[in-house]
Length: 118
Image (spheres, one colour):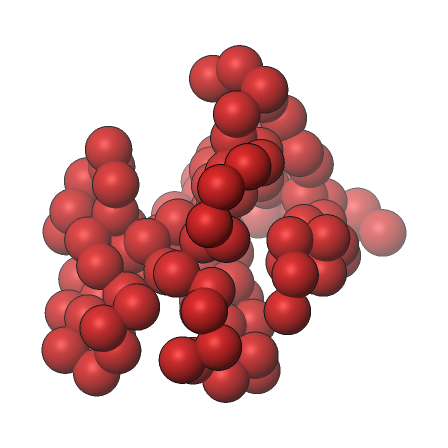
């Protein structure tokens, strides 16, 4: 998996957008204005994803490539090195989980608006 594939997958999530609020160094993916993924533009390929705290710890205990989120709330965010030590489908499931965590935290009005989008 390369950066473009990961970027495209993040953008394939319903109503997701890519922004650069911290400068050109990191792409930030949002749904309804809330961040669900951060993808550095350069350097070793990695992605930071929101995660249920219990599941986050399980992933860290299972995969050396999964660490507490860099510069993020370590309880709710993981950073994942994309180094072929984790199967591609599992990484995509982590992206889905992150997206779902964010959607779950939206207000009822926001979730209804999201449901109406294509």
